[in-house]
Length: 76
Image 1 (cartoon, rainbow, N blue to C red):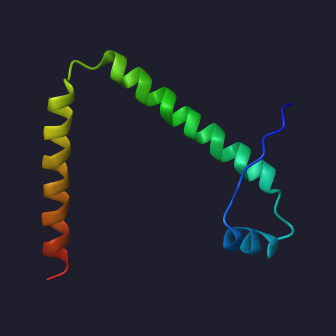
Image 2 (tube, helix red, strand yellow; image 1 turned 90 degrees about the vertical axis):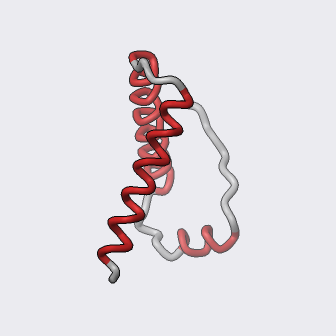
């Protein structure tokens, strides 16, 4: 197994130290594994997609606008 060294902010390390029962290496491995699965999914999705980057940006803006409108209505 390869060793990887990570830098974390001092405050995060202090908070991590307050949970000595946690195996932070395993937490990091799981986070890396999940991120790689997410990236693999996106890569496969992108390969099969017929959308252009402009289409994706347009759709993303439209979705964001709809979500924003729904949240505004909910908070009235």
